[in-house]
Image (cartoon, rainbow, N blue to C red; front, side, top):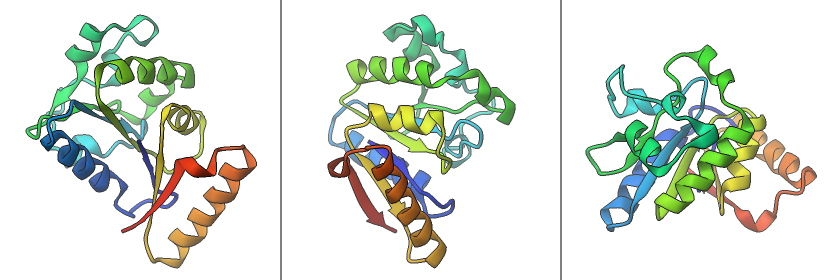
Length: 171
């Protein structure tokens, strides 16, 4: 699942975490990916140590299951969290192709993978959406949030993203 909010501040990160923790409580293996590579919020939300590894420590071009196991942060809920890079400029080191490989590996290791995406429409977001079975677009009753969600729906339709893979969650 990819959770996306066209407007920041609609609660996407908190919802992604709570969804991951709830599914994990049912006994499934769950991974949560901080897909906001420049401005990831999961490190702060989870009070992860500053030196906790991130996606950058993963040799993405040839990553194996053991490599991924070494770089995920295990939250107290039992969710494995793949944190975003610790500094903004480090995000450019990760390509869309890298993310495609990573998502393929994670699908093999976990029952459920939840991606907390950034608000920007870029190569990373499209890679996450392509790897997802479902996109959950989070909106609020704020007029700007609704306007941006509508613009995103138009964009997804224009690029041929299947309508049946999109759900809306009003927070």
